[in-house]
Image (cartoon, rainbow, N blue to C red):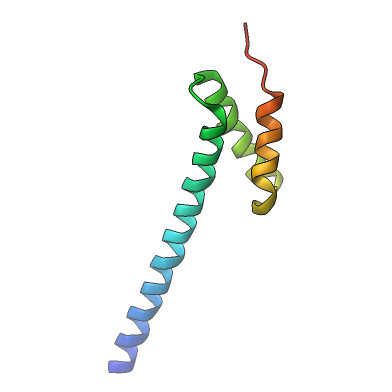
Length: 79
């Protein structure tokens, strides 16, 4: 019985750490996209859309900063 309790608690702790890791990683990616946008509200929406597109297209995480910088340079404000 003691072994089962230790096993369950250990698995829950590992699951919590994985969930927190994924959540923090998502927040860091979002902060990166928003930092590249600056104070421009239109560019902020554009960069968040680019971040979603990068996730959908499967851009590797190590390539994400350069990819987002490239997309930020392509931004053209709408009139």
